[in-house]
Length: 261
Image 1 (cartoon, rainbow, N blue to C red):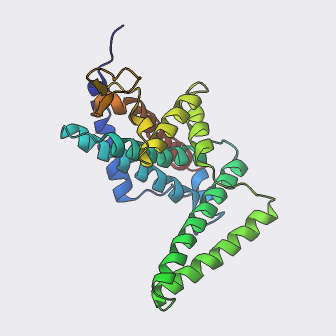
Image 2 (image 1 turned 90 degrees about the horizontal axis):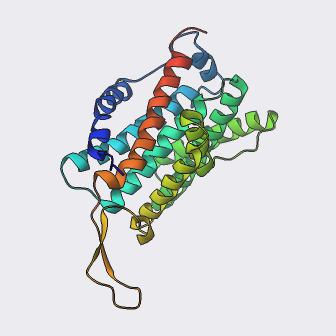
Image 3 (image 1 turned 180 degrees about the horizontal axis):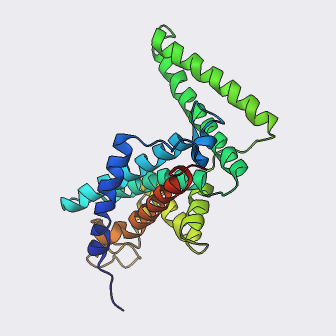
């Protein structure tokens, strides 16, 4: 069996990463009259297009960091898995938002993501407010603003009978199916769960990886010392999953927002 040249495969993606970095840095807005521009009117405070751009920017940022580690010859077994998990989620969120051809489905998903943004921001602001005893005017202003927008969005969702919450595992799996085909949903979920292990510092996430090797003989009771080194082959599946989700996400941005509807 021929072992793939993981380094060559990953290096072929670097030109796209550079291009996507510039797209995100320079800002991206849909063309006036395009389907995505119309979508944005539903909830202009967190428009669908900018939720998708944020996901794509976050996805590229995280796998770009892995690129830097690999090119310096300094892989990080736990940290690279954590970065790839975040890269997959950012890119998958954009694909999940943009994939449906039905506008109503896109808007429902955008409202779900916006609700998640407000919920997590409110949790952060609540803790931040506690640090200052509620005496920091800027924090309190933002906290009140988020609370008001949360209520407004909740009324819009209630009127539409929407109760869904953002489920990251489902989003990653569904986005992989939409971007790559049905069989890839499970594979993406596997890499997503491996990244969860890395993000939580759990050693099982390093098992079964080519760059994890046994040091010396076992002790006769099934126990031995192992060393995790990281590297191109260790990150290949997670990296390429995030990359293909990013590529499909930017294709959908052009499809939905590049020409007038």
